[in-house]
Length: 470
Image (cartoon, rainbow, N blue to C red):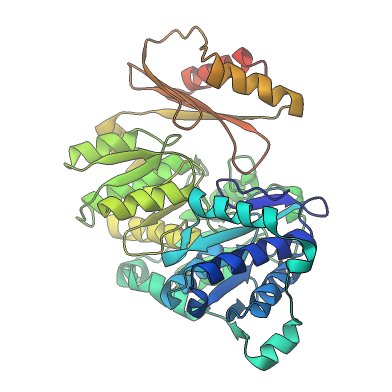
């Protein structure tokens, strides 16, 4: 059964991720486009480096073409942000990328995008699921890929140059050129290298790359840029004297940063750095949008500048929707995805990394120095996190305890309020918080806490984990 989560549909290859299900999703998209009379807007599709991504993108395109929808097919692996960018520039109402993003190597999936290249919201994914329930195997139309190219129903494109130029147009390239920075990139065997390296070399950065090339198993690691997976990058940044190390996930929409001292910069801190930089150094104006598991220091920065901070549920579709509603300056989440006003409406590690490099160049300060400047002004907070696996029969028990019984651990800190808008979030009167929610992309319960120091935050995470018997 195909079910969409916060980041599209993802499933284990050969289990639920099969040709039949990929074609089923494609036919449901085609049906919706026909029903909504937006066929003439066309469709953009791209894919990442995962096993079967290239083939699955062709299966998807064949179904759309057979339904009379003209497909712009990106003919080599690209970052997901490039697909979103091209769909936005072409005015497509629907588009897609074949990817499972940061999931383990045995997963693949489909991300669906809507108007302006935004992540599909629940209304659209629910429509897709309703459509799929009514589609029988004989209802799925298809056409040979080469025949569709010959007839013009599928057109091959490669929008890398357009995308790179759009990123460069948003950067202070002259400042980057004058800084003579050394950058080490770890694309984690994903798709970020070509675009990111091109941007940085245009800025005359000295760029080196590790973990490039074809590796369907992602070197045995999760293709997610975390403190645990970027251990080699941490060592090499210090050993090689680089100004910054940049890690990106499998489809290049998430970012992980290593500072000049070899410290992992938490995604919360990346968002804090960039919002602070845009307000203080570039003198821009605008609110910030964060999800419920992202640092509240952003609220303090916003308030200090007379701006608003909006809290939304997990899922970048909520970030982009709220950004559009308030014309926000920046939006992001603690998983390492962010975007700013004037760029695409979805996560983009290529642009985020490039803006961080600009930040170092323009400020004349190292990342660690800028973080210290921020913490001296707004106070320090540490984010601890824990991913908990569980057996299928445990999920109902956990769900009932959180949502039905609504019971809480006996916290040492006074509770200000509790929210169940997206999982369980407890706000403490001292400004700290803890959240527990089911992942929308993996079979996990995620627990996050932000408190005044590491030991307290980790203690809160462990307390919630014990309370839920995980």
